Image 1 (spheres, rainbow, N blue to C red):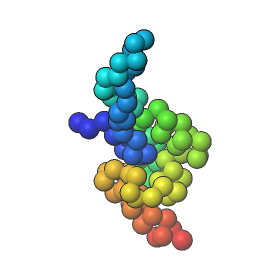
Image 2 (tube, rainbow, N blue to C red):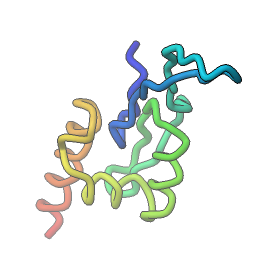
Image 3 (cartoon, rainbow, N blue to C red):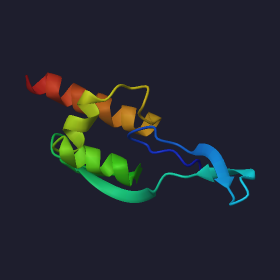
Image 4 (cartoon, helix red, strand yellow):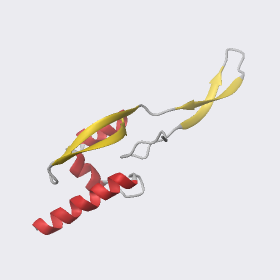
Length: 96
């Protein structure tokens, strides 16, 4: 399973371990991914996502999963999240 946040697209970063003698060796910085269940108010159901803690805070800041999905571009979202976004947009178009 790849180490990429399904909502923000945040993935691994590469850097160096630097010793006291200034020797540099490659290392990987991994995002803090959590398995979470997020509720969609518009679709009235829950969805399981693998989200970074940064992404989870962003979702809460924007007022929930529905607002986050509608504001975020499809390029950052995972295919599963894009599918949920399309479902949500379709339901909102039908209600309007």
